[in-house]
Image 1 (spheres, rainbow over the protein chains, first blue to last red):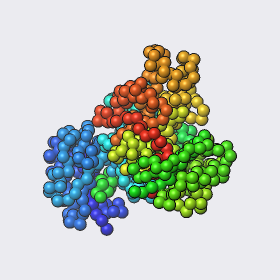
Image 2 (image 1 turned 120 degrees about the vertical axis):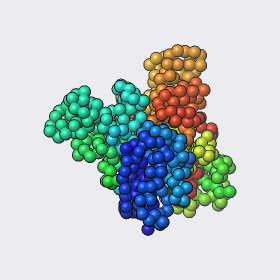
Image 3 (image 1 turned 60 degrees about the vertical axis):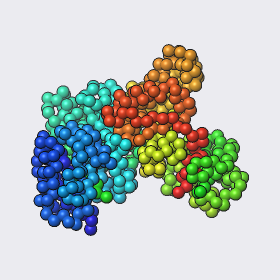
Image 4 (image 1 turned 30 degrees about the vertical axis):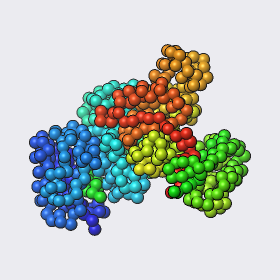
Length: 293
Length: 293
């Protein structure tokens, strides 16, 4: 069975693993990413971690998932908010030279989406749209088991989609961008305004206790999030939406609401498309390994 | 060179043609579609038209473009507003039996988009998003020369995408659906309200004469339309947008406005994606012929 090395590089930690083609993690390591030290330190540390995985002679390549848009042909990040110095840096070359293996670079949401499409909740489906609803909102389009990353690597940067023009402008995103209204951060912000709590988890906890203001936040978020999914559906009409990220841990509180709103915003024949929670524990490192072709 | 037969079936007329793989129309015919007579009459009339094209012995198949969403595996329309009796009707079987050729069925916007992607304004581009801005607004996603039609054949039904929740509900579409705000019909409706004229063409003509109210309509439409394109870009990040349909005949009046609004609504690296006018005279019948694989 084919094996590859997956690397899930984040601003805080990095995970490396040997993965087989069925998505089994055969060996893995997680350490600090040393992001602040710059790309040269980060990448030689990753190389050391890969060596620590043991015998990799039967691995066909290395795939790296990074937090930001990637030009996958040039193998560089085009924007690297959480990885100082990585924008435009030749990520692949250090590892290619050291291991004499082909190296593939892609966005972390694309990695997670690819893993869910191949061996997770979207397994066997032709068109999978993966959405991560966490600190931010991102996504990935997978068609016939291949990521569609787009001209600039920005396919799936759906957090910036406008769902309501009459909201506030937050950060550098569009006014009424869905990430500013339905991400975990947004739920926390509304929680602070209405309830004096700090995080999305606080809001979910209060809702479980029957707090009406918490439920009102969840209701509005569900409608906003459903509008995002309905919008995506009119563009690519996927076989399934797979929802990952921290918010989806509270799927029992709001997925049914999202499904009802969604059905109201699409043509009748489009209703009932599966909107399912992601199922993989480590989709990032798995999907990175699946970047290897 | 490979040849195919294209059929562009509309509610009013039908066009059939022999097309080569470079998109040259070798012979064509246009007649009434007899849509009100029902599918059996319509299809045997199409078969007669195909016979009238002359020698088709070197044609590899027949492709049909129809006005509405299609289940392309079952080869049936799932919604057929302008073709009574066609929803669920086995369109391909009559022609398959008569000509012993493979028959492919697809949506007319997908056909037009495919033609523009293969031999028109999008030639040579990897990801083409085609948008038709006419009586309604529709679209098509073409990746590597293949139409992505979606689970239910609704990929590209972008007219129903919400661009502003604070507008009126028109027909069966969502409140603030872009088709209700930026289609030719919508421009005509705003023209009637503000200027007492009837059609989008009237509004464009008045704008050319310097009428400020007409320009205000075009300005708002351009922003709404740009928001649609920006939304699509965040989902699939195409290499080019190709804009067809009647409105695009007035591209000189509003495409530059659309480009400016678009750049304001996307991430910096996504700016400047080509937003170009469709170039083909008969994309519908050409693209239908290209459905043949």
